[in-house]
Length: 440
Image (cartoon, rainbow, N blue to C red; front, side, top):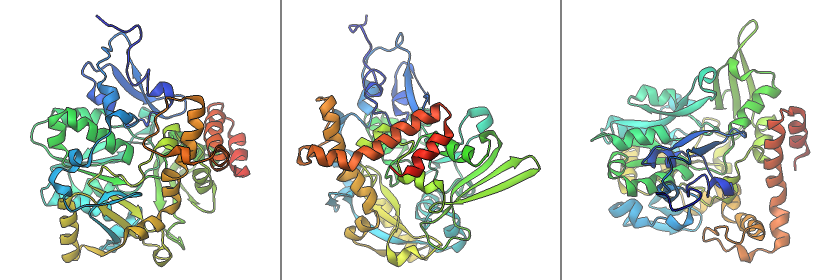
């Protein structure tokens, strides 16, 4: 017999406060399988709960990365593999920071940055550290309504086929269910910081999941976007989403700087296959991103840029000494001693071209995103506290920021996110374009 008039679950708590990141781990951990993850009206993944089947067990809330009450400790996450780690306010726990790239030029050029994440993933597979990998792969839009989804791969060829950054939401519910029910099959997972935290929380509840996922590699994340980001870019360029064959968010062909990569779409036109190439800095691709259009609300309250609960995280080396190298240069931040030793071995064998870099340099390379996550969030929490005194503070000293400063530094981007979603729902593409052009 239920003791609550209304079930207590992620939908009635996290989603109700607009703090869901859409990772899908809650649905994977639900013992009665009453949670379904699907796109909402803003093309953001959300959990939809069958309230009649829900038992209010609370497991979905326990694994949610937005739940401050179930935060993790370093020891719970890395155990003996973190003994020599250092701590940094911006990067979290780390063993070493590296800068460089994969030696094989073909692999480097085909990657989003310097190819380090893909190279480490391949090495984990070929050296039998794992049996398979979890990556983000293509999805048939016409039948699924999405361009990308989480997929399992067990070959180097499949890893390379799916490499590269995808600025598109994905959810892990079905993959986590499968991995958590298998025996003696080890996976390396690629997941953004928010999903990584959820998976770590789930590993505390599911021993098989903990055993079967020994490594999580995380691309750093300044903020996410809904699927509307990609659809909007297609529609304003007169490309029907259902005609798309392939999307590459980080194409390097013909660029003059590493940070001015191309958004490239192959699609079916009236007279055959066509290709559209848009520069990040010279088109709406970059401006929409930098203006925070289509940004999920949860991103405004996330403090983890560097994937602090991952075994290693990877970033672009946006520094003057590297940005002119259009082939791409990556930064790697290691937290797991096994991954750190693997990277050193790959460097000694000539597979990677790496050198140590100071955490201060890493922070400088990604200062804009880190400032958004670690500094400006103080103002956003202060603003939210005005309307909801029980809103979690995520251990942020939000009281150190004045209300005037909080409004000045955040009102534009938060308004952009809300208005862009509303206007896109109404298919007011011209007004979204106008909002973007205003540069609020």
